[in-house]
Image (cartoon, rainbow, N blue to C red; front, side, top):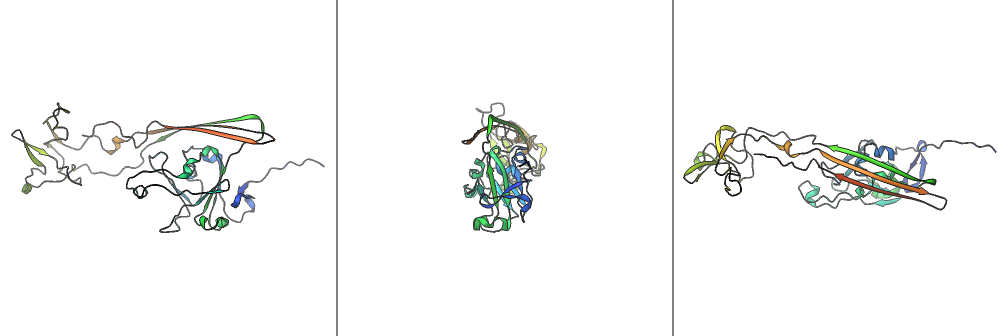
Length: 306
């Protein structure tokens, strides 16, 4: 007998952990390797899939480290039901339902507890296979929105201890800000018939009339900016806290700092150490990661907005 060494074809993990030759499949089963997931390191496995599988859409939170992820395969299938796919990790189905409050789910505040799938370190994933449509039928009704199969790394047989270090630095900045008008100030306009002057409320303090913006309303269409108009700002009433500004007027003009002044460039560092070993009797793999954010785009600067 003579030795015949052949290279194995690409293998795809399909339903129930069965490995199939990629060329033998009659359906699409896109596979994302660990190298693709860590090319631009993400802080969770879902964000790492963004842009790597056709028909897969990932909505990631903006400026919310560890926030909930929403993933759709081939769009929404239900108007009222859950549209996220079934996650199967090493053959075990996993529920990725959100546990956020109702207000947080509709974007109205509350607490974002993150997605369960965020607990998986992308550095510990060997491959991800996405099953769509009929390809996910073996997992039953739970897979009506598709299946995301995740295979984690395992230790390999080797005479030496395997050590892998992965380090990345991510910079985040605000991409789009709303267009805001800078012609009118805050509050509401007080008409002359209601005792106002130039759209301001008039208050007599120590025998002197002062113009005061009407901020006690839920709107932001006050008087038009005019540098010739002098008014009392919010810090002109407390002599103890603001002695230099007490009863001193200022020009009614747009502030020098607007929304963009509140945002810093977010810097996130991610370090991961993986140690693996194996032999005839078994194998082991341990992965330890550390993620630190030194400033996110949602962290306001200490700046004046007068």
